[in-house]
Length: 222
Image (cartoon, rainbow, N blue to C red; front, side, top):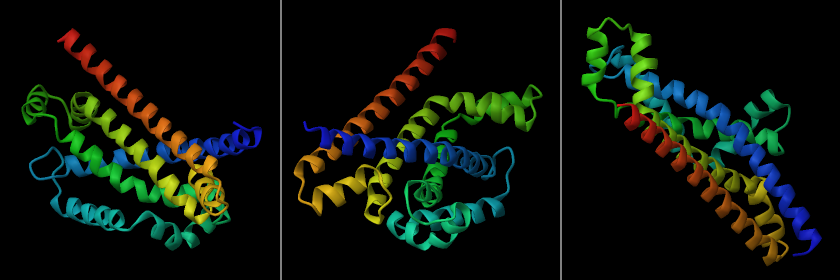
């Protein structure tokens, strides 16, 4: 492997990791808030509010329906306002976050819905208020599913950063297009594919390991 190839791939990998980490932190936080809001405002739940639930769900579905590559273009004015430019790795984080957050919201909503209603009702009967039920019953019980959802979210973010490379966002996707495809450098093309595969496998392994560890501790103390 030539020094030139190592340098190019290292730079692309660093940019991808930067985009993935920053996007993951922001989108997971926002997605969790939206997901838990959707879960607890549903029919028969602790903060039932069907109108708000329907409005929020519709908004989430609308944003989810827009392909990421289109969202990046549509949000150029918003990106310029927030970042000051619509070009580059940092600027791409804005549309990536907006695009991934609704997906994560649905993932977290599904994870939180796995908690048995009986446990929620039991906590309520023992005098727990709504906030205690959310953070001491629902979230802990759904934690393995939440971790798996977060893992899926991270993998999705890796995928959309590669797609964003088509707009010159930087990262491995940008390298695959500019160097691998346009300049006919198959070494760069295969190198980026291998790095993306390894990155996805590492995230999946880490997520599965954490989820299994949580389950083992839970069964140990039950």
